[in-house]
Image (tube, rainbow, N blue to C red; front, side, top):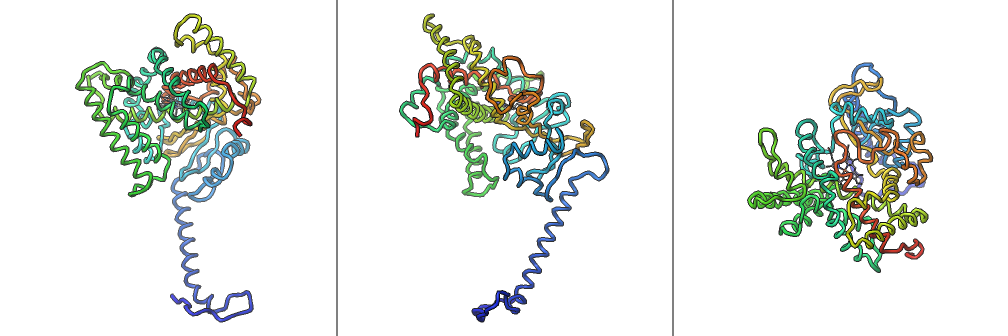
Length: 468
Ligand code: HEM
């Protein structure tokens, strides 16, 4: 290859001199060939992902080779991305995002087939980096007997009958936590994460103050969380690498704690106690790593979700002063009852927080913090007149269903009164549906109600202009 090292002769025209064109020609030729080669390679890869027959795939566009419609999804408002395609192609359409061919589902009936009636044909799917970080034996990565065994155990720890005794423990967290905001400007989401994390810790470990390992677990968990959404590049110095190191240490600390608990033979509380005591029909116990992965998995599933919803609740109440007033009145009446009876707040009191509960329900609909979930077709599937090839991702779009005019009139309005009558079956799925639905929904609602009770009865709200 030739390079001109001396300055080019001055020229008055805008066309590059011939000798420059000639010297860069091989480079241009090489680059164009490379681009063409890559383009053909991507076409080939894309083509290999598609079935070689004429069965009817759902309508929709697969976009560019390999990139698909990923750039469109990330450069547009995601709501418009989905709703434009739904208007154009209907409730079931195909697209190609994040390197995967996908089928999007936005009708309640079709979502029910994927999540409930034919759930065995659609397995949960997560990027391998996320599985490694949380722990491959956590229940949400599994299907079949292992999943149902773990699901029963986790569910039993979070049933109303199991958590009704935690009201005072969670209330104590709220009462220690709210005064730390006084006369301060706080970041609501961060504070809600702090609160939801503490609740998740007591749910996982029971009475957490007894064990030395707990502080270590908290620190390592936060380290893990910081790398969770980073690029999965496992090289020294990257956030992913630091998070994976924290994950290994977390395992060791959890194993020590599990060992200690096994030796003490005391009846332990929280999910850890349930998992430690579990035996299957052949009297087999769970292994330490199965216990550790599921403890971390549950903490992970429990705290960011609840914190986001609580942040939205506060935003909606702030934006709708009349609702805030009505919630405050409801909570004041309950507080007066409790004070007059000289007793503590109980589970039954939380059941009488009807309006506050509807505000939470409407927040879960309107904010739809989990816009969709991912499944993967385990075999070639005939689905509502379409063909879904094995390996394609299938995404029930919770947000689109929650924002459909057909099921929630004026979906853009924040209107808790719409929940005075129950929503139509399968149209309201903030906690999912079917075998993988959320086992923590009652705990999440309880912790939100307790925080709202103390926040509205002990503190007044400032208008936004008072902060600025
Ligand atoms: C408002 C807060 C929460 C929301 C909106 C939420 C939402 C969801 C949704 C939609 C799913 C189903 C995902 C799917 O089908 O792929 C799910 C699963 C799950 N959630 Fe929650 N969740 C919340 C709080 C919690 C809490 C407090 C816990 C703690 C117990 C928890 C533990 C789990 C677990 C373990 C799963 C996996 C279940 C399985 O795969 O069988 N979540 N959650």
